[in-house]
Length: 364
Image (cartoon, rainbow, N blue to C red):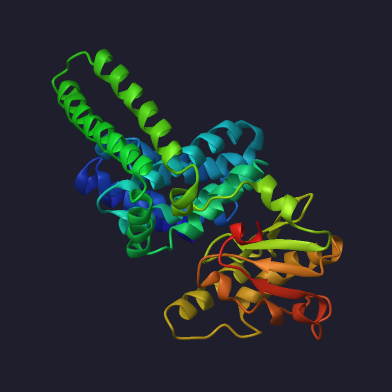
């Protein structure tokens, strides 16, 4: 109720000062949509997320990273209400996110900014995919989220190695030409729409170019050095590499005590207690850790929140070995000292062995 009151007051002031569809209204809508989701008001999450997306789409386009973040927030709310209704959208968003990352890697600059902007929407996408039962999409999205922490310099070096191959260089040149054509067409389309002209031919040509670019970039990232640029593994291959009693654990986000646990025959969303007071305390403490003000210790609320779901799954699946993969700092959480919520004198490291891996592909 307090959050709603602040949000409504902010909305009222912004509308009064700027108008009903000013882009800065999204600065009020987006964080409130996330608050509503965390408080369990999924219908309003969907409503407010779409309000933000509609405003952003009008000003900066539907395909902009910020617009997609707003849509993904709305989709997350919808997934909690009706998981089946979002499955196709989840697969589409995952494929689109992969295409955006491929474009960013192949562009002359912009990887750091693109990766940073995508982290929040990828976090939302992972949660939405798991809620909707789309394990393959969740696994791909969480790998992309980890990839977003790779530095631009490292991506440049990998790209340089890939371009040393004549076939890779030729493909990259074709991609560059197609991307330049697409940029020109988008500018022409914007002008035509602003002048009220019909644009069916331009839109058809733009759709053809989008498909061509997607096909070429998929070929470029198919194998070898170019494949290492994305480093995405298929869920089925990872499960085939896991033995009985072995699991892969991937923290979902940097800020929530949740993880994806994969065994050779199942995928689990390890999710701790959803008590709002505990979530707030965990968020506050973890933020202090990120800022360097407080280390992660065995009694850290972040670990307390994670312990419940993690211990349940380790016990149910008779896990004896966990491989941990994820972007820092979430993957650096000392899982060996996570306490059993039922028997506090028992620690995870006493029950299972834990190995840290640079990526899921290290299992293959």
